[in-house]
Length: 276
Image (tube, rainbow, N blue to C red; front, side, top):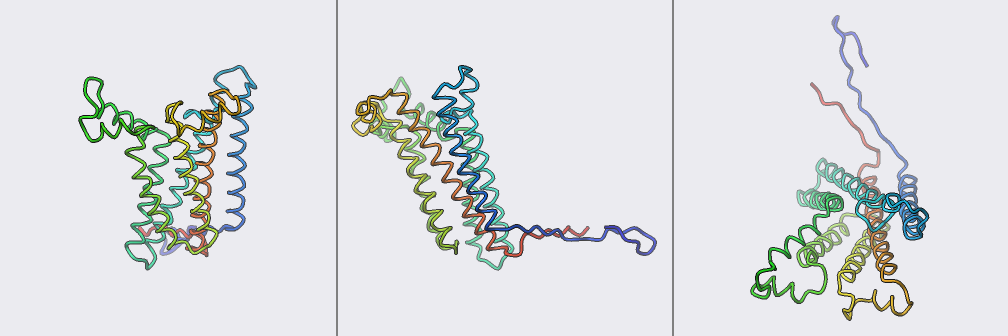
């Protein structure tokens, strides 16, 4: 808004207030995300697996197990936007009379979920796992001559899990302990606990997926034989389940973080222009 003062036009500084109905926002977000995730499962089952169309490009777009599918885009985008929510919480904490440890804790969680979004889009852990396997176990050498080579010899699943499961597990434990003290809402605590349990389940499913088909721990082979199913059917819907519970885990995290953000700023967001 412009006003005249001393013969000159001067811009009057005004703050911008953003208010929203927290309960309605959280409820609608939860309903939309879960509904859309179930829609993606149905789309995969009908269009891709059920061969609703013979056009390969359309079926690949709907294939929830592919990294270049609609489901992959949604999961990556949701994770990234959720990480932005955590960065916003860290920013708010920074402007509160809170300890530096609290601020750094939120920054660490925000950085972790930002990495998760990048990983989803670029398949970092799979690429690093493949590189790790080739470096430790080159074709022209004896793998058992090194510690990691011996570990690769006895580890039955994907190589990336040797490197990343300890890191993911440690971060998951930190998130649980830190957020249990930070989140005041019982519902939010239940949501983050459920989300971490879903991620742990997804890791177990991925571990089983990487097993040899004749390995004694491979329950997919047992399901295939018991129910006389095609191997592709079991593997595909196991992957569908894994991707779905990962997306739902991110949804639960996101809802818990929005609820916490609303508690930190009960009067809504307020933006004040910087003085020139």
